[in-house]
Image (cartoon, rainbow, N blue to C red):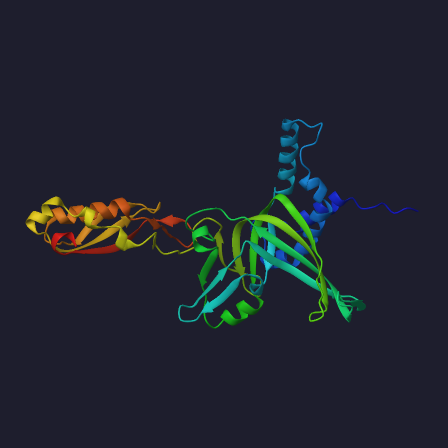
Length: 340
């Protein structure tokens, strides 16, 4: 009786199902079922198919149709990559503010294992005998492609950082055994494999041969769960973080300068402090400027407000669901003689 050999594409299809995230699913169940290592291995088994370029007897249109069909199958559903806080670049707690802050690098080491092999004798170039201690390291990494937004959850200008409020009493256990779940779509080239031989020396006789498998993903959502798998915070990647405060883009002191000083000001010696409240829309743009304390000159007040309205830019505030909302921002400018 012959045993039918399992088709690599069938293995990949199974792993795509096991690592798939379905909307509303319990994250504890997701992380128990999902296995990034097995997903990476199955992608590696199909690397020739996934990375195959345009064939000699294939038209550009045929190649595009094949590539699109493959992408539709591979990237149809979101996969869940479950990380421990120790896996990411930094994850620290700020007790004074009662908040966590973390950062995701563009490459994350999800799973690593080292197997020690039998030692062997060798000689250096100088003929000195040495006992080499070989080992095989298996690495499975995720390469993350982030959207290039100026602000928001894991945006470029924030170095892919995120932060969220959390009570001091439960913070230690969250950091120890909580989860950071990245929901993402697989994207071309899907998988890359690399072998790196060791380089043992007399001073360092360890020969570590490293086999790396890197899976390419595009994050869609970041979720933080407690030790029970319950979601405690999340944000849509490239969107606003929940309850994000209104944040100036650039230095507010640069929004008004001497070029905004009225020409009549030199003749009339306009001086004083302008205090205003800027009405900021959900798009981060200033829609209105209301004077709350005048400089004593209506012309100087108008000129200052016009400068704030023209140059002030913000990352908008958001509600508890991460939706942008309108808000206000207080500003002031003191003018001395000759617009200084």
